[in-house]
Image 1: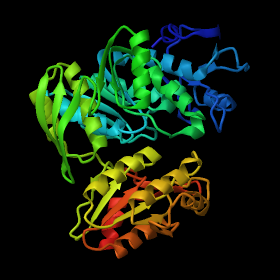
Image 2: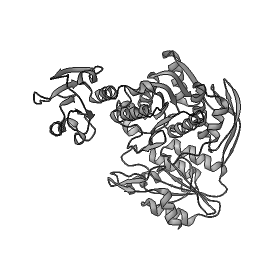
Image 3: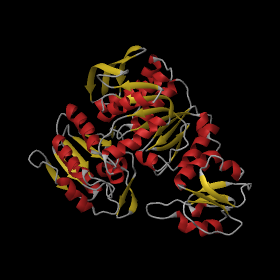
Image 4: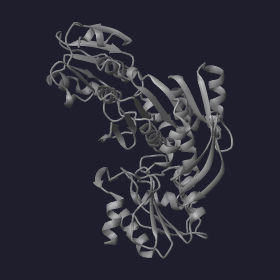
Length: 483
């Protein structure tokens, strides 16, 4: 592809050198550069891509995109831009010939529920024989093929490549988790979103965004990128404010959902450990649903997915089939299959609101004690650690406070931050830094009808301790300990 075409939508400050050259690839990692590639020098949090320009040129880059003043040889085309991250999205979408124009793009944002909603929508779309793609916390799925990724929302270059693969596989719909980080870091620039879904907002990622308002402002940007409809939780404080803002600012369809209010809502609710029965009320009629996922938080997720499907003109009968045919999502309220008289549930909850949702749900059907194993991530917002300790002790009989992904922090220091919030008058607790030992202890002390909750890791099959990554699959560890 000719460089001049790739640069056609780039807001560059200046270009020095030949622009009619052929480009064979793009990358922002100098180690991946090959002959006739574009190297995009990004100023990162830990390293600066501008320091690796010579390495990129040595590896074959003949075009360099920068946001700083640098000098290169005459045969190298130099493109100066205001923001290299913005430029990366612009050149990537052009290089892959704007693939999202050929996909029905569904973007989901919010603190909790993004992954579950993605897979619930996917289950419904399979009932109408749509080919689907998913981008999110569990990786990328392209028509049933799984690809592992490092971020909830990958970098713009990788996203555009995945979208091109989806288009080549004749995928109809791409369901995408849109993290606040990805919006801030321009990863979702140049994506043509058709549908936007807002789940909820609570304290999370404040190490990155500083305040809840800043966090919400980033998420709000998604709903100004959509072309067809915005679907908003009518019973979330921030969702209500977003609805008012969108009603004033945007002239596209708006759908709201909630248990007691909204365009799509629920009544006659019956909860159990096996799921929720309810009557779903919609503008197109009412229908009884037997959702095989427990907890009111999953009811909200199902209503959001149903709203999306209704906008896509999918019948209530097929929505019902999609909802009732759900097989669960890995690491989301996942009941581990055991031949024991107690249960173990794994969940990805790693924020105060997530803890409240999951543990409150378990409390409603627990026959005996709740034993909760959890930690908090290192190098992340420290303020939520005592909050999570407080919530865990509120709903649990025993807490085993341990490691999550401690990263560069000492696990023992994180544990001390957590236990400040634990009410030791209502909840017995143990400090066990090694997570495997904590799981083993929980299994050893479990009695008949107890429920062990393993919170924080969810689908993850690794731990990051002292900056190193180790294999850590909780399902396999549970089986090894029991055996």
